[in-house]
Length: 173
Ligand SMILES: Cc1cc2nc3c(=O)[nH]c(=O)nc-3n(C[C@H](O)[C@H](O)[C@H](O)COP(=O)(O)O)c2cc1C
View 1: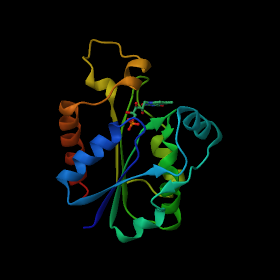
View 2: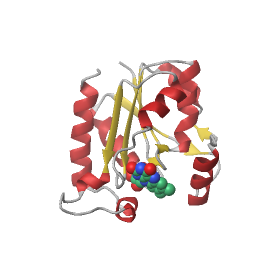
View 3: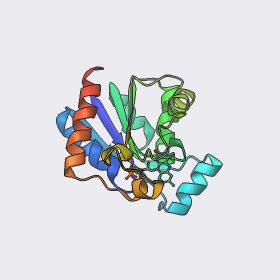
View 4: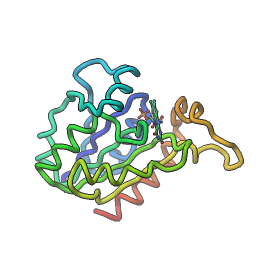
């Protein structure tokens, strides 16, 4: 099976996880970049005005794969805007996909994620993994948004999160 691991990362967490997961799969890791420089102000405007930024590689790259696994952050309860062009492409060109994210989780789960993926692609993902940085803190610690936003996953976190992701991915292969 030809697997594409497509990742976007603003601060490195999802890219590090995607890279580690790809090493355990016989897949290809493709990093998404935006054509224009992406700043915090761009991020916020994209999310408020539902913009779809121009990205590389072009989404039609997906046509040569049997399964695509998206990795990217959740911003303001939604999929990060640089992933939108690819999700929209799937609506016209359906193919099996999974969505995996390491997000903050300080306010609990991202409950609208499943509906958003369905709306954008026209199909539910075969796999949806919404992993939270908040769970990496001791359970007796009340995690704040500030703490999760600044957290960069370390080698130990990556190992734990990779094993959890691989366990879930293997169920759909
Ligand atoms: C503007 C902004 C909004 C965010 N909104 C959410 C959110 O709604 N839910 C969530 O779980 N995490 C949220 N986060 C936290 C990120 O998803 C988290 O830091 C993620 O690991 C960043 O991934 P990256 O390093 O791959 O860019 C937000 C972060 C930023 C900067």
